[in-house]
Length: 400
Image (tube, rainbow, N blue to C red; front, side, top):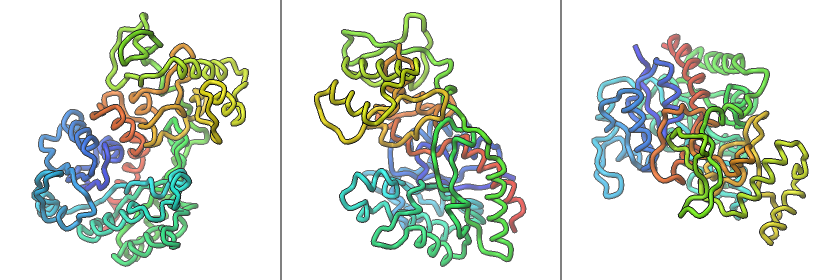
């Protein structure tokens, strides 16, 4: 018997895809408010997981909780009978999801003049709590960024608000989120330095706290002693090299290559940026390390652009180490995710970003290229999701 799941803030389906890979779950419904991510998730459920009916994948604003449950007819989001009727009389065993994390991210707070204290996304977790309260699953999985541990909108710790909210509706979570719930996915087979909080909650019972301890104990046992390097993200992909005088295109397949791979088309780069990328990638490859400090990178930027900057803007991915984190911000530019091959002299493609996030090569991303980068940056790596799914399924067999 499969475990029935609802995925909230589902995005393009990083959590869902990992859980479905275990063969132990059935997705009853998924919700997200970004149209391209919903189309991507629907396509994946149809083509990979043989879901005939994807009307249960809803494009809607989860903050409108009552309408989401009861049904809606909306000029932007379309029509739906609502989650109550979609679920019908089936039990919802598990709710998974991660409310948008930009308001909790440290980088986001640095960029925002008010430290994102006024950002509505600080309280999207409340909608998640309402859905858990309505469907009363045996357990839930709540994913977010490390910055959630220190976020204090309105001067009150968001983590304390979350603990209190789940306690009020009858669910236990761990008291020590920093020690128990913080994971670096590069130690779990993901070729990327990516720290995330995984909150596993269980309906209160005489042994619910022991069940939660068991989850984190099993997760920690799966931690590798070494980090996963990023080389696997670039292996066996066709080379895309600079080319001049083509409209709206700065790179094309090398003459040696003739293989087309979905979502493997680079951004357009100016000749100036191509030169910078080549210099930096070659510096890393030859280990000259002329540009290994923040100061040297700022000076290179000034030299090539004539502009001043207090921050360095460039980073070449080192194949011998995990990549730096793939963020949603990647949709704006790829300067901090430069391909390690000097011959290619470009930022990474959507497919390479997807590989760094452990999406399978048959996972097709829809929407504009910017949409695709954004949804990948917001996703939970499916390989990490699969591990969570395996452990949660073992634990849920024992829950009453």
